Image (cartoon, rainbow, N blue to C red; front, side):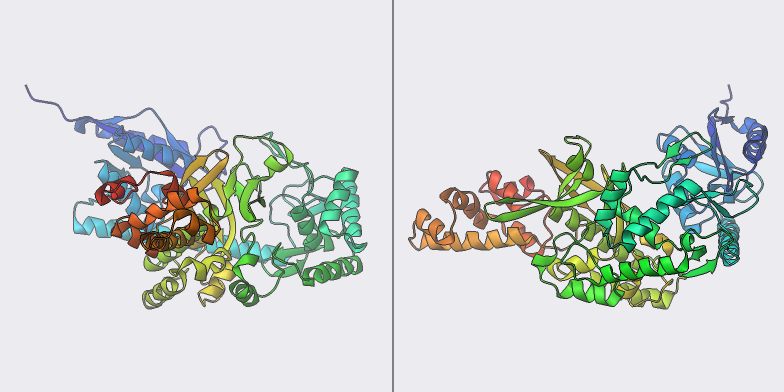
Length: 572
């Protein structure tokens, strides 16, 4: 008996960049799926079988792989439940050469193939692969040209004073006619906006304005969406108040990047009122401020100041930059024990709402070291793989990669605040850090002109490992780079000194009294001197596992056998 063909399980993937027309009974996604299903049916004699599940991404660009249906499809492929991916055209899968190479590698690892029903080629031959690359190059070119046209259209529309979408600010609503791209004043909210500007004109700082708004019940604008969802209507924060006070839309202007143009909407704040308030804000910005924040100075002054200030003054370099996955801001705080200050970043809801098991309480040193390592690894990797420049240039990329490594891969004490100054915002979630970099600061730090850095390189996602002890959390992220643990290095050096004193005949109590320590402190840390040469060398150059700390070594019995030590502490 002749054996039939092996069954090939086929999944159809469809995508449409915009959501226009998706509400129709038969839309573009349906048309793509129907064509692909017919193609699969024509290959029935080869054992092809269409899977019932649909993988449709509507209203999502092909320039990203972060698409819900695509991620579901990849999960099915990884599980071995899909043998063939069928698409209408290659650009439905992706418009990026780099993304396609990664997808193809992932499919091949799972013995999964793909086919385009309207473009015939065979990737098993060199000519077929050339054809594929040519098609993808044109697809990527088309996406980039389309993006440029959209940006140009938005810029031209804003120059004419048109409102180009987004959430309407407090004091305004979108025009009831959807064809008119302009704002209309909402009278009751306009009164509140003038009230907030009046607070600032009268000399109240942002904290005092926040308190007055809370006392008078002035809330943020409440937005209602077509889906039925609602957002806003909560207490105004200082950040929101500052945004209101500096938003030129209230002066009747439309902002586009660094320029403002006369808008088609009426102003809520007249020019004189606006000027007075801006003068007050500028005066407040010029006042000296310790370490609570950075005044709006040029990037060079900011970096030089961060570089030259003593380390003791860098209290919270990530203040105002970290939020958790609920959107809650992490606030710097500290505790004092035995004349030592321990710094933390904790979720705001712990300050205002009591206990919450989902909230964060992270030692500052842990999160700052993790972010520093992640940013360094990302920039070095982006420079090496020619992804840092918006317009890749082979000669410049090589020079830039050397420059990045020279300025980023340095001991922690030399680069600590300078690296963290590159960070614009961080979203922290279990097992994940989403980090956005400040384009102006990064450009200046790497001697690049504005706009030369790729926007994609300014935001990245970093997997992290979280270890909890009680209510505290330790985070390890990015590649392990030679950033020595100064506390561990210092304790190792003291351990060798103590052992030398013991050998010379000094008593343990005498040595402890000279150093201002308890006897138990020396008993738990003097054994550091008997660690294997491999472990001690790693401690000195900073290449030890990130969870190897002085506290862990002090709590853990250290075996005499060096091989056992290395296996126990992660060096095997």
